[in-house]
Amino acid sequence: MHFRWVYSSPPSFLPDNFHPEFVDLFDGCLETTSSRCDKTCIINIKELGLSPHVMDLYRPPIIFSEWISNQTDCRSIYWATIRLLNERHQVIAVKEKEQQFEFGQLQKWIKLEAKIESYPFGIQYIFLSSVVVIDEFETNPCGARIAESEVIIKMEETSRSVNG
Image (cartoon, rainbow, N blue to C red):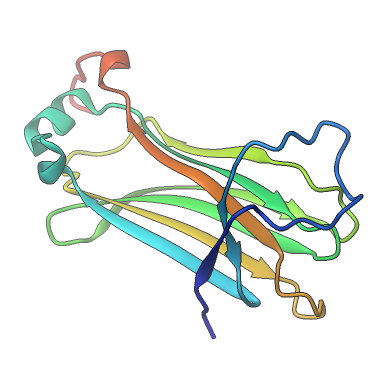
């Protein structure tokens, strides 16, 4: 069963369970509501003003980042995934990053980044997903938080591609 994220302002943390390097970075965030929460977004590159030809020619790095945090009394796993899709919505490239939070781990914001730097011709869509799964044995459904999701297409750092 999949549930929604809920917006919380300010973020709810367990008191006195902060990592020594914890910084209160955000006024609000998305928090999990159950044992699994998914968040997805599909971006049509044409709607961003980028042509498929330009993407094929330069193939700029694509970066998906989010700030994530755990709750000390939950064990959870977070995945950030970028999937590049062609015009038929078929996956042509994937990059995934994972962060595990153990039970008892002190709370701290971490910036997690998935980056695709090399991919084949034909990108039309960027499919992004964030998934959090909380250990089935834990009783507290608040296992993770997400803030400041961002997608960057780094056109200024590209060099002209030669046949892939």
